[in-house]
Image 1 (cartoon, rainbow, N blue to C red):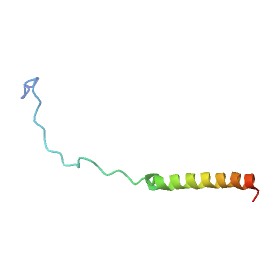
Image 2 (image 1 turned 180 degrees about the horizontal axis):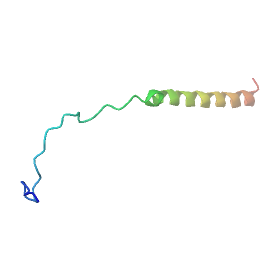
Image 3 (image 1 turned 90 degrees about the vertical axis):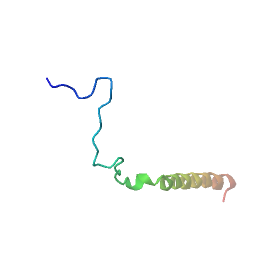
Image 4 (image 1 turned 180 degrees about the vertical axis):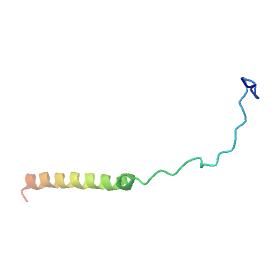
Length: 59
């Protein structure tokens, strides 16, 4: 068995890393743009509200 260079209570020295700390994640496409989904939901809600307003006032 080899003799450890660092006592058990201490942290061993760290070697340098050649990779980047935070790799870029892949593009999520449409899911990276939530305002598109919010605008579609709001548009549908407005259309539904207008439908009932037109029904109530008989336009």
